[in-house]
Every structure is written in structure tokens, then in C-alpha cells.
Image (cartoon, rainbow, N blue to C red; front, side, top):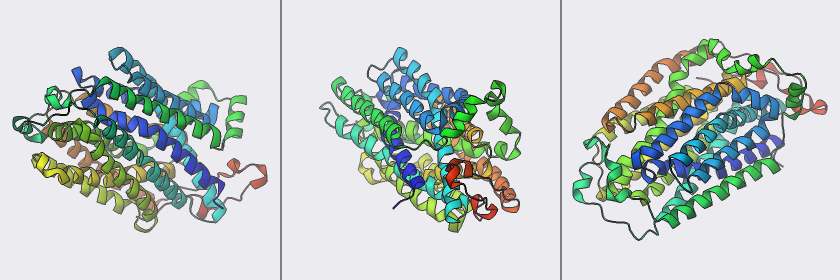
Length: 465
């Protein structure tokens, strides 16, 4: 029999899998599908700009009042609204639904991270294990299931758009402008990025709306309301509004959080580059929009498998070694992309980059999320709100300059943020190694009949460097 906490991890993971099968597929296509006047990329920029705003105050307020479970359901509804906006894409449909998604995005992710951290600490105390090890394992399982959403969402788009009878061969002169050889700003006007037939777009978006609604039902029906009592007590004796409102910013007084900002922002830069620039300037330009899904499937599969593996490996290797490996993989890819000139005859190469990028992203996602849960166990809601805020700032900056900076400069920017991360992250890791974060008591989440005795060496700790 699996434990109740593990069951809840699976429910959360399956809910996010279903939800991001829809959103991940749409995000990968925005720069190509809604390329007119940069509308698709603009909508993505608005999404992450709204997430920054919501991260400032919404997660602590919603999680403390609604609890993690119903905050997740409410956030999922916001994502479904964005899918609905893509049925008839235009400035008056995409931008408002992008704002709605952004406002729900930060509470959604903060609630998920808080839920997994609570579950990991509780299960670790029950089994006599370090809470940090169980948290790493739970985040690894979550991202193993969640990241496979890129496979299913992009498989749907490739199979549906592959039925378009207007797919044309790409002229040789166009191939000369693909990759970093040319500026890469005019790729969207080329014939191969023409929108597929409207009926096919409606079929795809309708399917995405369906799986988004399914995600809401999975969580609403099957997920335990693990912090129901705490939310009820908070509603009965609420903190002053300004205290909850400013919780995200108060945590910025902790120098460790400030030092982690480059690492967190890099997560946004590297994800936005693959979804917005690689798909447009390499894949769509040289192969056609119907190949975007297949290439992103490779990224999702690599990300999913590596998330599971690295979530378990962290207890043996420590985070630092994994972060170093991810940094080296991204560095090698960035240098190679600066010189590679994509051509349809090199089809396998188009899949090598997303496979390596997915492996690195698996480390950035699993280990950074776990790191926040371990460093700030007493301020989980505010910590994960900060995580979403700074990661989203990376997305916003990357999508904002997408339409007017040449591809070569975009690669240099991603490389610069990566190098800054390699300087700042080790400072936090070294401090944590020498001064481990003290333990935290999670027994309140077990109920009065299952209260556990706090064991400082078992509830929360630190993986070795």
C-alpha cells in the first residue's frame, strides 16, 4: 500500500500533467502560430508580467484562506481561460486571458510547492528520514510526471497540424536566414509559418480546453485537503491584511533569497529561449511549424526522465554537482547554437539540443524548487511566491526583447545570466553546508490523532554538497 502522502503527490502530478499538456503545447506554438505583430510572444510576456504582480501578494493570501488544494483548483481555472482565448486569437482575447492566467499562475505554483514540501516533511518524520531527502524525491516524482506533459501536448499539435494540406517545402534562400546566421527577426513572415487551417486550430485548442477541465476535476475530487484546519483557523483569526500582503517582500530581507535571484531568473531565461527562440528560429524556420511539436516532445521526454533520476540522485551527489552538470550542458548548447546553421538534412541534430536542454532543465526545476523548500521551511508560501516572481521576471525580460534583438545577442544574454548564476549560487550552498537550516515541525498537518514527535535530525535538513 502506498502512503497517503505519496498518493497526494501522484494526484497533484497528474493534475499538472493534464493542465500543462494544454498550456505547454500552446506556449510552444505562440511565437509561430500567432506571429502577426508579435502577438503570441506579447501574450506570453503579459502572462509572466502578471505572474510577477500576483507573486507580490496573492499566494500567501489565497493559500492561507483557501488552503493549498482549492488554490490549485482556482489557479487551474485561470489556465483554462487562456486556452479559451486561443479559440479566436486576437489582441482583445489573448491579452485579457493572459492577465487572468498570470494572476492565477503564481498562487497555483506556490500552492503546489507548499503542498509537496509539507507532504515531504510529514512523510520523512513518519519514516525516520531526512525531510529534505523526501522533498527531493517528491519533487523528482512530480517533475517526472509533469514534464511529460510536453510530450503529450506537442504530440497533439504535431499530429493535428500534420494533417494540413498546405505544408510546403522550404526554399534554400530561406534556410540561409535560420539560426544565428541572420538576425532572426523576420522569420515569422516566411511562408512556412502560415497558420494552419482554422478548423485544425479549433480542434487542437478544443482538445486543450478539455484536458484543462479534466485537470481541475482530478484535483478537486481526489486531492486531500491537507491544510484545511490551518486555513480554517486563519479565516477565523486572520492576520492584518498588510502583514499577509507584504509577506513576499519581507522575505527579501534574507540575503540567501536575494543571492538566489540570478539562479531563479535563469530558469525563466532558459525555458523561454527554448520555447520562443529555438522553436521559431531553428525548427519552424528550417523544418516547418508542424515539426515544433515533435522537437518539443523530445525536450519533454528528456526532462521527464531526468527529473525522476535527479530527484533520487540528489541524496548521493548533492545539489551542487547536479547544478554544475546542468550549467555545463547549457553552456555547451549555447556555444553550439551560435555556430550551427540548421538545415533539413541534419534532422537528428534538431533533437539533440532539446534533449540536452531538457536534461539541464530537469536539474534547474527539481533542485531549485527543493532548495527553496529546504532553505525557507517556515515561510514556504512567501518563498515559493518569490520563486515564481523572479522566474517570471526572467520570462518577461526574455519575451520582451524577443521581437527586437537579434538571435545572437539573445544567446549572449542567456550565457551571461548563466555565468552570473555560477558565481552567486555556490555562496548560498556553501553557507547552507556550514550552517544547515534548523528543523521545522510539520505535525500540525497530521491531525490530532497522528501527531508526531519532532525529530530535529529527521524532519528537515540538507543534502550533502
